[in-house]
Image 1 (tube, rainbow, N blue to C red):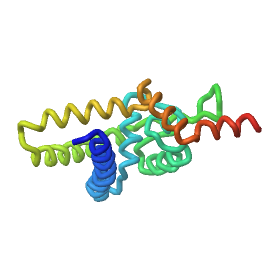
Image 2 (image 1 turned 90 degrees about the vertical axis):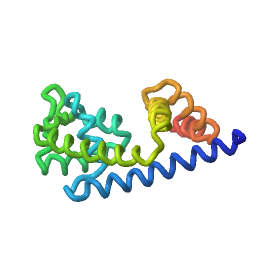
Image 3 (image 1 turned 180 degrees about the vertical axis):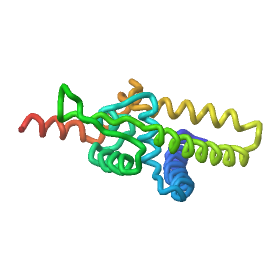
Image 4 (image 1 turned 120 degrees about the vertical axis):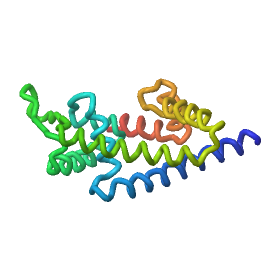
Length: 171
């Protein structure tokens, strides 16, 4: 397979995986009234409380979207929000014990689904696929310097970067 065909195939695979994996997770979680985005937020809070900004950055969603998700999670008793004493504008989100239980259930459901999918792949290819997915997930981490460089290169090529700079210069 030639390089352009590899790239097209990889792009299409990622696109399909994103759509269809999201669909599987939505179906899996819907029986408990949970969403994939809630799962991501709960997972991000497992290692300790976070500000709304830090949570939004970690789950790669706009802060207004995360605010709505956190409001719903708070109503369900899965998180608590508190204002920081040193800065009343800063809200800190913390997972509750009930939220940890919900996350464990969601994680178990997702792990079972992954196991079922992995069982459909021939045994001799399973480890190769898991390792390749792990490598790609590390590359796609926004905290990865290589990811940041690719992102900036894409922005420059698409002139988004130049347009943002030009707007900043004119304001």
